[in-house]
Length: 382
Image (cartoon, rainbow, N blue to C red):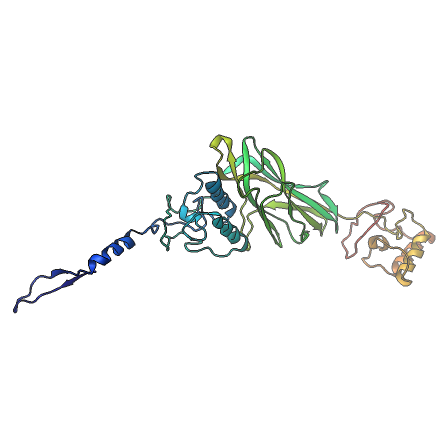
């Protein structure tokens, strides 16, 4: 410790005299140690290993750490940023911490989620300044597309399967990817438990369903042993129940929620030395078409014929708890939106007293042209 004191000489004021305390010789090395401790003066965001100012694409930061650890890549721009758990070291525990943060949105140690200096002394540093995230550079060689299985259409109430396909260009290998895709919940409902990965089983795969869509994150290999090689890969599969007729779009988007997810990927190339860089793929959405069940009005027993057997069958369905009426729209013979005795009277009038024919679709198959609360579960002849 160094201290200042004054010494009085008579009635005159003197200049301060520096007096050394022998104890200062003991404490001086400790003071120097504290002054020279490595506390990063550079600002950064904890978890942002690749230094792009973004932690929502945590898959990219995780791959940067694993390639730094296992492949000797210079993918970690900021060591302090890669030290996700702030223990003063970069190791596999930082990978686990970053993945856990991405899944649960738990807060990492400061500075997070905005730029700031390192509040804890350690031997790590940060070679690059904290930057504002500028977005992902589009790489037109990569294509991410939504592709319905089969015709991409289904009857209202049926289940339609869609795949998400990734096209990887020659010499490239995708080591991680994140994306979300959306639908209109009034028209389509994603089936719980239907979301899964494609044929390649990734080391890390997680997803979160929303009322309007789903977001996904996957890393093929946490050690970088393999990735999505050149070609076309199914990276995800999901199923929807069709709720309404019409064309229903499926689009890619940046999903919010507990696990915010952008549409981005990280890939390595033989032409750049085999270390991964982040980019954005070209995105192509698709649609699912909802269809109404075709039927023949007044054919209540769905046998393909129009005769008095339909009247008997409808009476049994209405009053006897028997009969077979698989299509309410077909049993709504007068097309008033209700199935009742009036439909029996209408059919008898048409068959025997010259009454008007049933409204369309009649006498052939077709969808219901009018809106009503009735449906058609099944009509085999159509």
